[in-house]
Image (cartoon, rainbow, N blue to C red; front, side, top):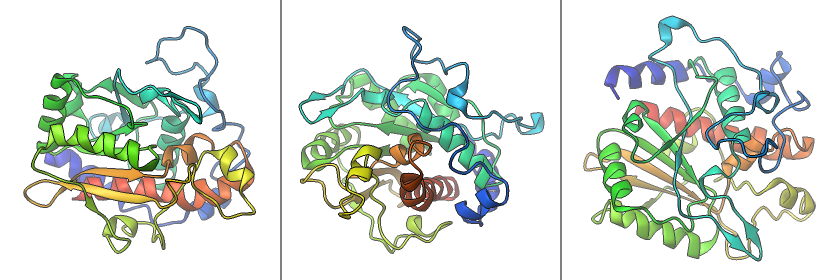
Length: 297
């Protein structure tokens, strides 16, 4: 990745100054646009895992100016072979949890809410794919049981030290966090995650968040809408955001624990209350803040 591409994306993101609500009222999609819901896969049996559904789960596409073909931000999800969970209280699909709905919806909102040029087609790539170095930002989900291969450890370390940025989400409770932390110690034996206080700029750089956002799965949120419970498990009541930094104090990794931003993206069209309470107020603002911070630091 080049410094020029990072600067172009960073300057474009500075256009993200309006709130999500105002953009919707001004003609944006908003809740009830007929897409963005869904829970689980998209229903095409035996479809290759790298294929997007033909109807893009209802998410509209858009044109990208050919002049920006090489300066287009692409939402990239990392694939890994380990980590699928089959527990009594939780079913997980490893890397592909919340895909493709979350990736498509977030890409749509990013191009809607900012002046950044966004690729309408999110990608998924292997950690060891040489194409990794074409993308300055990548995302991993449901990492509580993953085990990196030796090759993945080397590739991820090289990517991050060469300017890449990784966002990690959807893991709950101390066991899942500690499991992932141990895997990151293989990547960086001499670096530990540092807690990000609410005063950190990443919570304020575009959208001014007053607290660290905790987004649960939509059905859990709706079931508890009168209780104030926003956690998925009793051992995961407090959301934590932690960063791993390089020798120049550049954040390379943000680990979002006891929260699932991607559920706020994936399920934005499933329930109007959930959309307004979690997608609109928390999941999209935090996601956009992370992109802005990653592209400008």
